[in-house]
Image (tube, rainbow, N blue to C red; front, side, top):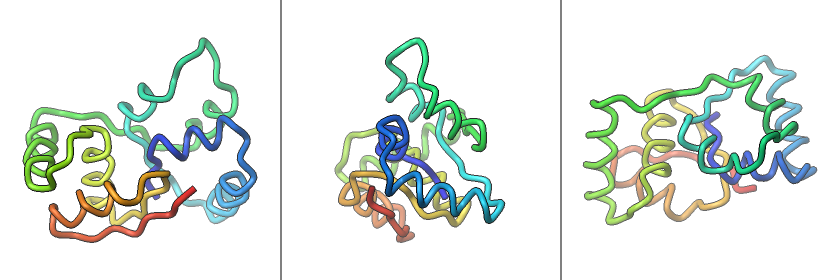
Length: 123
């Protein structure tokens, strides 16, 4: 699965639904992914112990030039503006992941513009 900002915010709040789902995924040995830009979007204090525990079990993806161009093209095609949402969606499509987040409408619109639907787990 790919985590969007809503998932990390849920972790930070200690959201029971997120933590229950997260525990099941970790027990299955799955390796979640998160964009470094998503981390930057939610990291607002010197320390986020709950987010840090989640990130310790994630693969963190960066944005390179080719992916940045791909993000720009899908934003234009979708009529949306959120670079991070588009990066999350394209990463999830590449890996065949579901997206865990709190904004399913934009995620689905971006995925449709990319030509590949993604499953969204709303938190």
